[in-house]
Image 1 (spheres, rainbow, N blue to C red):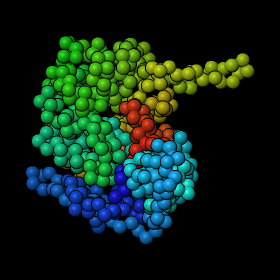
Image 2 (tube, one colour; image 1 turned 60 degrees about the horizontal axis):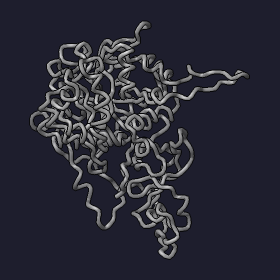
Image 3 (cartoon, rainbow, N blue to C red; image 1 turned 135 degrees about the vertical axis):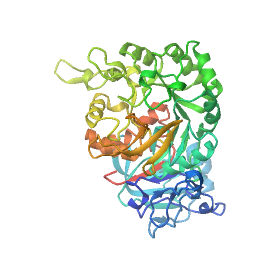
Image 4 (cartoon, rainbow, N blue to C red; image 1 turned 90 degrees about the horizontal axis):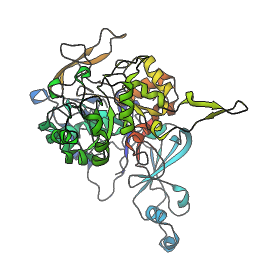
Length: 510
């Protein structure tokens, strides 16, 4: 079968692109995928919509997850038999040899490719799960199959660095069936165009972390696994109770003993093996001093959030290695002109405000410092968590740092009702105090938002509408930028040669 994680990002289902769905090209050694793919949510054969069927205990029952139908006539065009001239292999480079002797090659043509910060008419070739450069193969080897994209945009798969759960599953609550939880969520979000993500845990007990983290580490993506797991994001419990949001107060902790307290909470081995980044409040006792060791010894990223940190403390945390802000504007001190708090870090972005003029009045942008160039901030663009005007202000201040996140919880993909975020009871229904009464997830009996129920591709569409940015800028905020934040931009969030072949097809309205 095609080794790339290829997904179609439709508005709510694959029905938006009936001609182009998952493409399967079978070889003699392939297993019948239809007999393998099975998970909680399913793509109904007749309606092609994501649904979930409730079974025992009100949990979604196990059904065929999605079928891989034979492609419509003309979608995949077999090429001439691949040519592999052994007599010229000795004169080829290592890269050429690998491509010439590697697995089947697929060419996507008749498309606009998002590459090098622009949309350009080009082809995308991939082999063995990687984007390849075809220029050195002309006359030596032809593609084994060709996909006519019919004018669609070909973009990197979406990357969600904050996903608490979906389809009735929660990475903090489903301790007893965490493997099934990861499978169901991974397969489901792949259908929504998300090809890699960080499974996120909310503030929990030490027992919970030791139970679930070994299952939430890095895992390759495929049509069997679903979207790739990039390693866990642990959001808490070293956070300020004054900005707890939807986190359980009894789970929150301080770190007067520095790294030893993080070891007691998570286990340093778990941090080193399974965690990609964590969210902390730098003003909490012992946290600021622990950041450098967390970065250097545990090799994890640090994000500031759920915090009342002053701007000075936030800057110290950033200088110590905290390069990310978790869901900007939410669960942090409001912007104030005398002390802008964590939000004030956007002023160090090296944006257009740093332009200077030469003797002839020509703008000369200063080189951004290494510190300012690495500021990234998450945005939940569901129209509820952050007002569209606030999204636009943040984006105009530092466009290269915008990272769209869903912050979705277990109710994403499911109807209104009662759910869990960790151990916190959540009610999903219309939010009547917001224009249009959109659906929202709230801690039961409160007005506190409990994550979102939005998909990442919906965030991309909303972000473009809120900021009036280009298609390229909107898509890169959910592909390239999160990959840069995690330091994996050579493999994810790009269609450059050598990158992972995580590919989505998009219409012009995304």
